[in-house]
Length: 120
Image 1 (cartoon, one colour):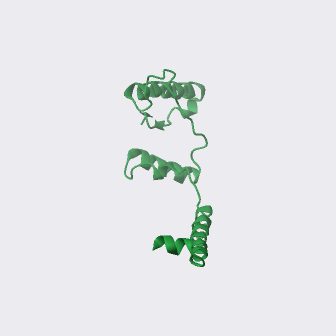
Image 2: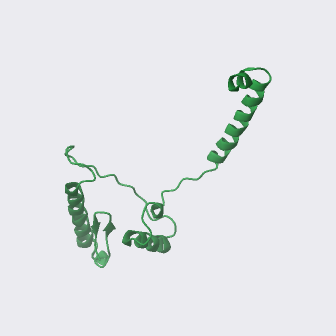
Image 3: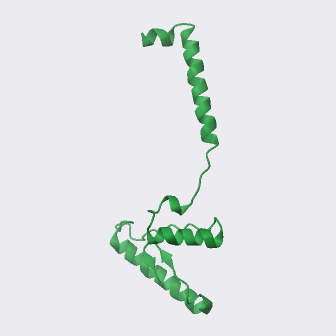
């Protein structure tokens, strides 16, 4: 039954037109979609990091993340989501914080909030 409807003229043309119309409709909708890098979509509501993101968004308008930095371990045997990697990243960020405070004393009272490292 399905084979006859889809392969016999004029039904094959009708089904082709229906499938094409639905595909075009979905494609137009997909082309209208907008992408975002808003962190509030990825952070659980009520979490300290979520609150921080909301405060940053309120203080600096909608764009609070000018740079995305991917940190990878030099040692390929260390998993990215492992405790040793997070500890190494926390040490790195603590050194960055110390360098900022040393070279920009006015930043001394700032809080640094990253997933593996938070102050304040």
